[in-house]
Amino acid sequence: MAAPVGAGLACLVLATAGCSPGGAAADDAGGDPHQALQQAADELVQAGTARARTSMEMASGGTRVTIRGAGTYDFVRRVGELRVQLPQDPAGVERQGPITEMLAPGALYMKNRGAGVPADKWVRIDTTTLSDGNLVTGGATDPLTAAELLRGARSVEYVGPAEVDGVAVRHYRGVVDLARAAELAPKENRAVLRAAAKGFTKDTVPFDAYLDDEGRLRKIRHEFSFANGQAGGGSSGAGAGSGKAVAVMSTTWLDAFGTKAAAKLPESGDIYAGKIAQR
Image 1: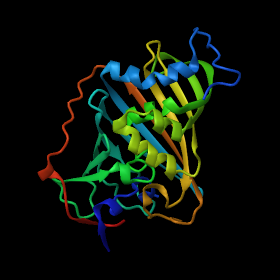
Image 2: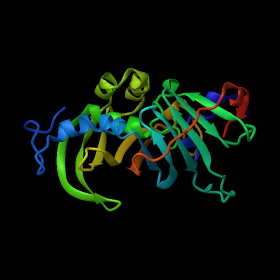
Image 3: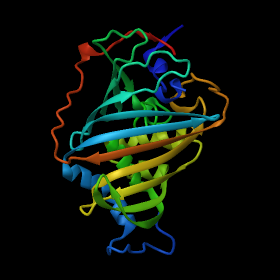
Image 4: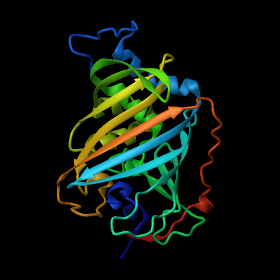
């Protein structure tokens, strides 16, 4: 059965299967954990660009699938390009080639999505209409959005020193208040986070964040939770719409700051305006 583009692509993930207690305590490097996390997104904008790797792991009903992506991100333009690889279909169907995703304020562009879309065309999704704000729908959390969520961090603690890809980092842990993150977000991302604040089963999201000595985010992991069939308003996959809780672990790694990131958003004539087959 055919469905409108927005509905057909509503949930790529499901289609595949405050302050620290007692005040802001200083960490062993003399910093304020809460302040460090509040500034994480701004530090990425100062860095300009970076190479990004993503992993999104979903567990539901004993089934676990992982979607991986890699590409570059321009934090000044708020534009990124990722090649996202879906896991093999459990039925043994031949694995689909990577999907190219373009991330932009309020929009997600996808190429090689299949399901009747011409190979040379992009599909555009208005992320402000998705019930999760595209934090999980596209199979990768926008790296800058992941950092901006930390503006709403609560119950922050400094875990200790760690290492990410050979770089010394500081490990922080806490929960994000989605409503507060949306309130403190830049206006270009506020609508997306407001949608997310309303869409998940819980209004707080646990996180682990790893910052280098310059305050740049090297790794960020969020644990999202929603009712199966809820995210993005879509439903496909076993148990969709059943209301059972689905846990999604989204992790982003950033390195090679200052790398070339010249992603160009699709022209209007390159965007598919037809319908796609719902999976």
